[in-house]
Image (cartoon, rainbow, N blue to C red):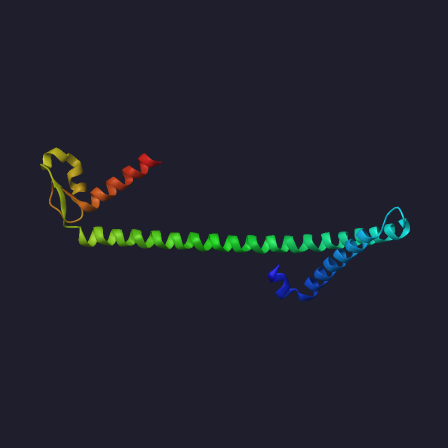
Length: 152
């Protein structure tokens, strides 16, 4: 309603005037006895019915507009939250990979006899370790992939 009052002043003024007229007409109707002065009461009732129809039409327009504005605002908030979440995930992933690849590339987590690892020994020692050692980068990748498969 505040947005309407600011941007649609004339229409809002008309809405308020109809609401005030409707209130006044209802007060006047309460003062008239339907049994004693039926013609006046019926005239006032028709006036109230007409004002109520106008008021309902305008209020429907205003509330539909307010719902539409609220929906657009909610959608833009959701888009902003999604983009923020995506950016945080990307930055976290890049930082993790940077630490693992550049800082932990030469760190051996585990050393095993090379014949025990078989053909996987060459893969497990990537990127900078000797055959038979398991690097932190590969171990992190294996653990992350395993957890994703278990959780999904």
